Image (cartoon, rainbow, N blue to C red; front, side, top):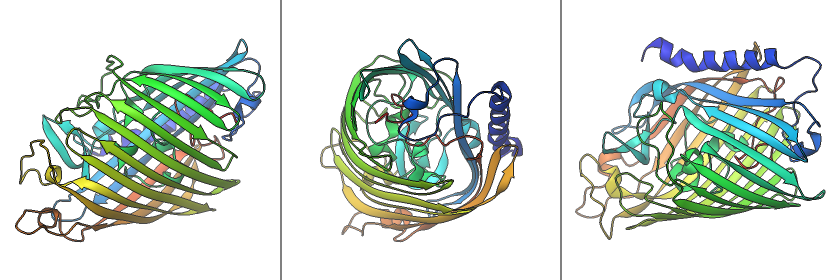
Length: 426
């Protein structure tokens, strides 16, 4: 891949960081902290800004025989502006990615990953790139006394109230450059092309409902598309303290897959924990989800965690999920959806670490890597199986250079959602 393509996201984050710093007058107070009480810190007038982002430059070697070796850059940048208007708080957010160029239009190699389509074929053993526009949204929260409030949020691109916080914003996944294999069970709707959400918070409880467009984005990644709101979801969240966060959600998706007929129903639950001590932190998230499709029902379980002390961090992810075997056998088998499709349980475990090399120009630069282990379902008698196409115990690994805004210069936008961009106001 041309050198300029893998350098672009690093330059983008650097320029965005310096631009934000230059536009913020020095006499302004520091940005609000990333805790659950940010609404209490909002100034009575004027704009306040937050930003977050990351760019990984990744040497990716996926397990043979299906995996490939590539050098790609996973990246995203988010900026948010907020201010008091009347009695409430108005916020606008924009999230962007250059992955259509830096991981190629088809995406980066990730064995056993399934999702979306490319040139009218299933995109198998690949994680698709995100669109240039990952979120363009606005929200307004009006308090109802000291312990309650209502919020309305929406935009041409955003995330409905469905599933856990997207993996990019989970502190338990902050050092992992790759998407979970169960991404399309839990949080793939975070880039819905058209969404409106209404929310009511009361103390530690948050009730949300969304209308959104259910179809996955197409392979044209640079444009902005909006479609009718044909799907819906609801979510109940509970935050008893600044450290704990739980949610259960349900959603109906209208024809989400371009190559698979029928609607989907998704249900998920998750519990997250985050303890911080300055810039040190420990975070963990446990997730469970179930998807009902036209011909199959699939379940996924996942546990991920990150522990950072000083310049060093260790992270891990374990997934136990049902895979649709006939999809993954492509191109040996050209899959046609049908009743009674083959489902098998498989397990994936990721273990990794990263070390900060220092800061420069408001950016934290780190070096890290991870290893992925897979336990593939055994071969059914007389049938072509994933053991034949992927191997019984393939092993993958990543080595990456990571760049993000320094935690000393801006707080991390962790555990944020479109309707709660400043965190739950508990």
